[in-house]
Image 1 (spheres, rainbow, N blue to C red):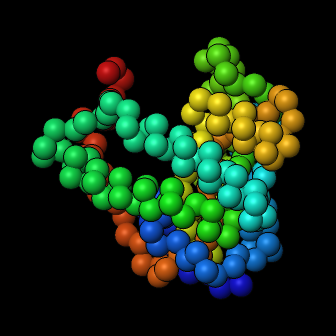
Image 2 (image 1 turned 90 degrees about the vertical axis):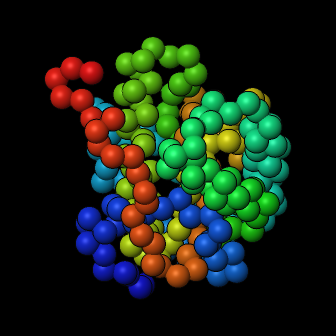
Image 3 (image 1 turned 120 degrees about the vertical axis):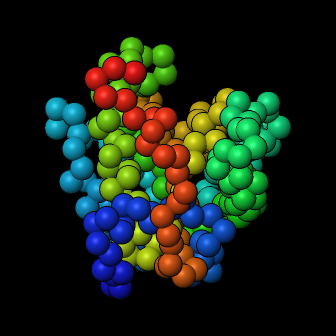
Length: 216
């Protein structure tokens, strides 16, 4: 199994949302995914609950079904009024078209990725109190991010998407995959080897407008 031998700082700063550079032709070995997941399961989980469940979807028909749900919801999302229409000069405004282009590419090719991951957490988190939601999500999302970091070290690319959860998409995915009642999906993640491994840190906002000491 090939590893990139990245430092901790490197893997943390170069794990990107990969869409257009996913290798759609190269299979991903089950043992590589399971090794990444073994690492992810070392992430913290509230009260040691370990209430996570992990669906790895490789069946072509199931992938196509998930991709159809995603594409239908993406059409709704893409045509909705923008809530983040950043002003010219804002780096997020400069990056928007490129991000949109890559999102469209993934939508058109989601069914072609070797594996789609759908992580779930125990509990129905729709309309729960903030404490409950924060506790449950905090028991899953660190493990998901750990999986993505472990995947990056092994030359795999991932992207965190949630668009399939819009409207009745979560219910449709639940029925398609046989997810039992009492579990909430966290998203839909393409998993593939990347075309090249030379990812770089992304441009981000400076600390000054987002960092607060003691009071906002």
